[in-house]
Image 1 (cartoon, rainbow, N blue to C red):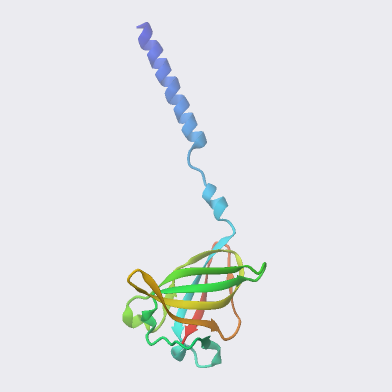
Image 2: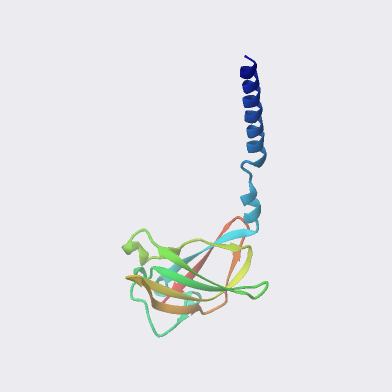
Length: 162
């Protein structure tokens, strides 16, 4: 009887200490603090022939041309941070609803970036052959293209391709 009471007390105390330890060191919202100051950028690709009706939609591209927009499967975007001048280069996937709709425009994956203003310096489009990325086209905006990334938000920017 004496051992039963002692065992019960020890079991109760150990369960109480374990519950207190879990509640003190358990889940927290630390990730929110680490993610503050970040937003997302996404780019929409359009053919320059079908985008707008003026000069504003054109790009200066290299000698290579893209016959079908659906050929591009990945995009490397090169940006410069307007605040400190650092260059950012990231490769993201491209997608559309289907191959026919890809000719009307494609969207890049979202890029997580620090909030601020960035200038688009250039872009490279790739297709995947086997395990390799094969360059399809490279270009740069004809006029200054700035994207403003808002903290906790999504910023969209259109890019036209020849």
